[in-house]
Image (cartoon, rainbow, N blue to C red):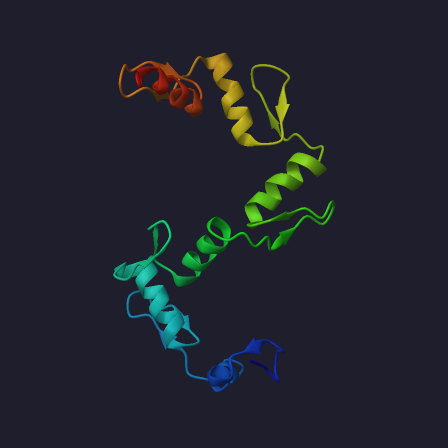
Length: 169
């Protein structure tokens, strides 16, 4: 790996000439035949065509089998779901997380006081919209989750999981 003389990014030696071309403002752009969007190189164009138009190539996780249309999405999936490497650090307490979403949830839950989600039926407020949604069901009586065995309904999805264990015997 060597550092690019233009931007300082570390690049594999065999790719440095291709990378340096991205800094040339006069380089020819590649245009999508489906929507005319332009790209700086053919690899980005090909990813765009696959993920927005043809959906031909899928990038499959070798651990769990989930498939993505973009190689970067698969890479992020593997890093956040199958890696023990904690790359995201909370700036307030130093805790580390395997993905950005977990770090963000931790930060809001532990280091903020704002409760922007207010119940329209009572004076309760919540930090997360999902908590407000579950709470609102206590007022509306909505039970969107049902047991596929006996059709009993529940307001929370995990209650169905617990309930279904009663059918196991």
